[in-house]
Length: 144
Image 1 (cartoon, rainbow, N blue to C red):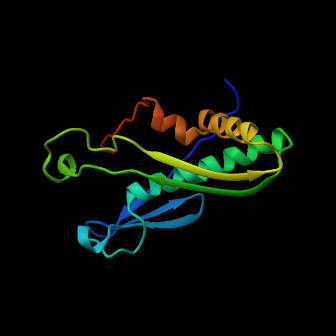
Image 2: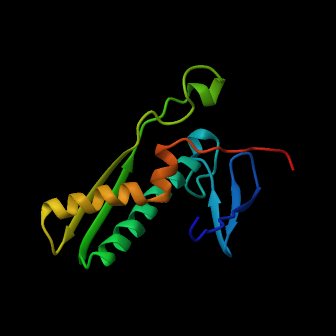
Image 3: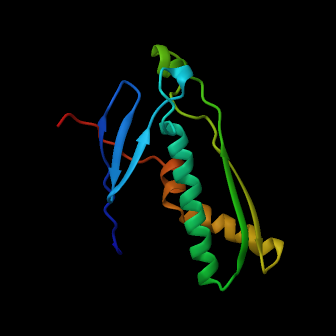
């Protein structure tokens, strides 16, 4: 196997909805909107997931563009999805997660449309967050 990167996040609950998180010396707050009982002091977990996907695609697109000597002049990444809360709220129904996640990328480069489309497709395949969302990944949850 090639180079590996260990990723670690530590966190502590402050309230029923608020979580303080630390990663690599950075601090973040996870919270729910008021309509879900939170104080709206930070993005909720689903918004962080979408943020992670957009952020990873940004880095991956720029990395591949640099490898191919393509100048990225503009890049906007929008991530959307709808979730059925029945499983989360009452424990019944289908999946607790999104059925579909939609990513729209607006990109302007110094190359043509086909090359931009190819760059985006390659980024989707090479982006670690996209890979984890699109393929089954073992997740182990245990009591410490």
